[in-house]
Image 1 (tube, rainbow, N blue to C red):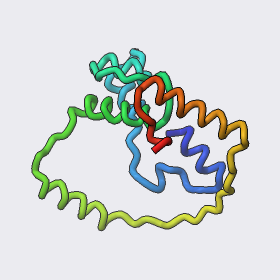
Image 2: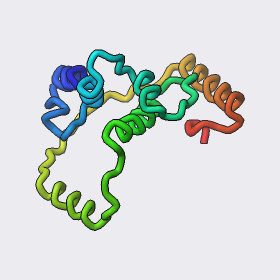
Image 3: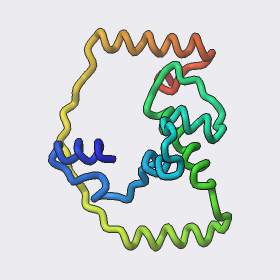
Image 4: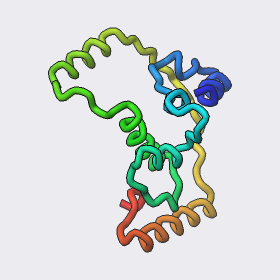
Length: 137
């Protein structure tokens, strides 16, 4: 979280933790397992989460794995009462005020070399997995 907050402030924006509610899973893991390794791989092994092919590393895959780790650390879904859950969500949304932030971010187009590298990556993925990745669909 400190890294993200620092980057937001460097960009002239509010810290992420000031804009929305954030759960720091690394801090949670450190408090649950003091003195142990708390990397994503270590938590996957500790909570016996099924391994995924991480040959092509990416933030989306890590986020999916982290969601499984988070559910394992917190005990998963704790209620099946959908009416109570949606009422709680509706109340939380009414109590939250959000400010729209306008950002004029530059559009940086990829170079020819970057486009070629991406196309090669997509082809390698398809050869390895036997199906096209989401970027090729």
